[in-house]
Length: 231
Image 1: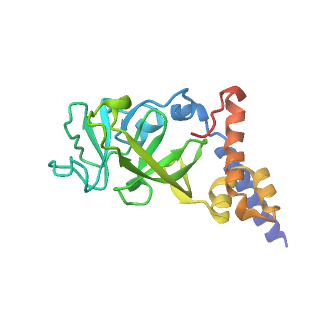
Image 2: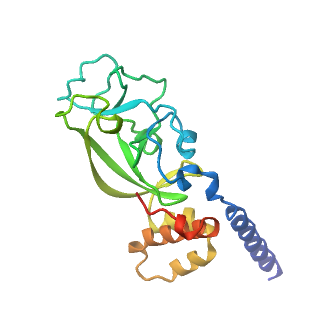
Image 3: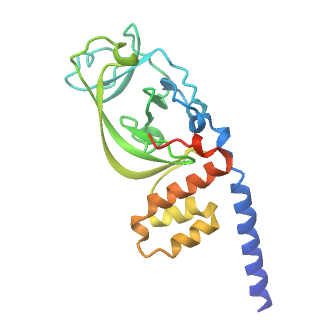
């Protein structure tokens, strides 16, 4: 009996230490979460995204498919986003560009999410745990000027919700399920985890509790009027 008591004490103590460590998360350490606006450009890596500081700012984002007049250009990759200078020169990098922002939204290369680099996920900026949507970007060929419309050929984004989460502290991405919410998100807040466990319709409440945790992180460190709505 004494053995079980000791084990239970060690377990509870470990959880307490772990939760205390996770509560040290500092929203203000991530400019992408606190900035009044998202800077336009392409990110070469995750650090540039977190700092809201894309290194490629004079760039156009162009989706090249089988109908695109650019499809035969040397180096162009079809059926995905390609990046060009304002003079129309293709930008080629050693590794696929990590992601980009059109000044309003952030898109992350699928290579970082699912291992498939031809697609991009649109990020909903909600806090430490953001939501991701698979986005298909299609050109409007009625405009031939590369740097029209704030630096990019006109395009439309068709988004279908896929309930996927992106942890900005680690770059980890995972499907949002009852199990992953408890194990990877609500583990950081014992009160919310207990409340979620008591819900009878947990499968329909995963996003609500994801948002509740994000709000707790924000409310502790950022004035209420500075909290940004999801993009």
